[in-house]
Length: 166
Image 1: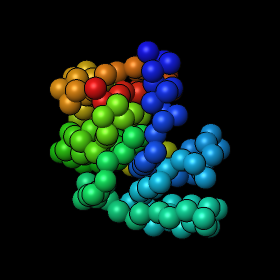
Image 2 (image 1 turned 90 degrees about the vertical axis):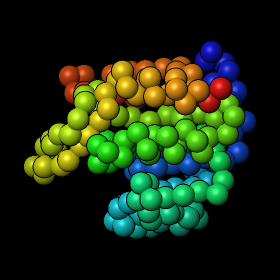
Image 3 (image 1 turned 45 degrees about the vertical axis):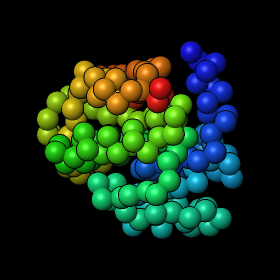
């Protein structure tokens, strides 16, 4: 399974990043990866453009964003849990539908159900999630296979999943 996933990533031509572009640059070669970079925050886009002027960035709300192209790889890290609860499944469906056959989707989410608020750097922020079980069931229903699921920030309820479109 890991070998098949690695081969799919190596063959990927169109990559999309939703969320914090600065979070993944230390771990990737930006010259090869992420043909599309999407973020709702004008400040994050400005920071990314200043640090990586060779790339283009899309300032858009993922709830309203539409693409004419499909992707081989989508990374949505620490972005979906900021969506309104009513948009969790529609946005996840959009990401699944914009994957090419054998495309890989990696995203993080909260292992909780409903709407919540939390504290980070003395700020209160909104978050929502459909939980671990519903995320897994939704991916199965969208014909994605799950390769990895991890609660990676215990005791926080932060999880991420690696899946591939069948």
